[in-house]
Image 1: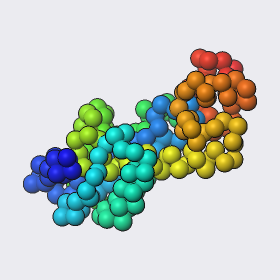
Image 2: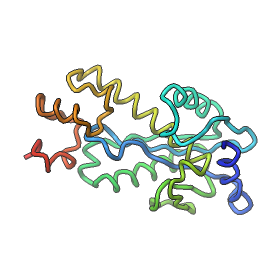
Image 3: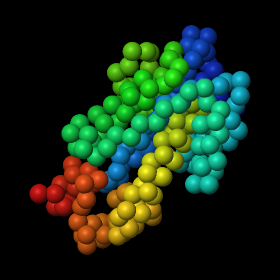
Image 4: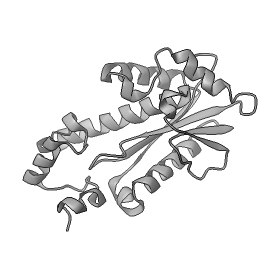
Length: 202
């Protein structure tokens, strides 16, 4: 499986020798940031076990996070907060995060592979890859960095606001989360644009 993901990236190699993968985590939650990562992997040093972050256990993601941070040629993770999400909408905020993540890499890539069906405005060529986190090693790596970074952010937030039990649902719209919102109302870290329809925001 890992070999197939690396082979996908290597197929671009003759035209684009330095590939970066870009992915996000947290488009759907009611609160917290959207997390976006860009990663340039070393094709000569493949990281065994890389996969779509959604297919990995929390423990496996944590192990791979450390491996990617240690062995990637370059990486950058950006968190785009609720105020920007409310201002731009979630797609706009995600595109901004992707742009910042790619531009923040310590090495300039020759091509950005973007998970999904849209590309942000970049000053390098970009290719959208639908379900790319299950096809491309570099997008998979980005999905792991984005997911683990956001989960850790929400776990830290849970310590400050224990009443919302953020460590359980990570801000996603679960039945429990809505029950707690009914009880305690919203805080500044909530995405107001996501909550207007349910009457939490006037």
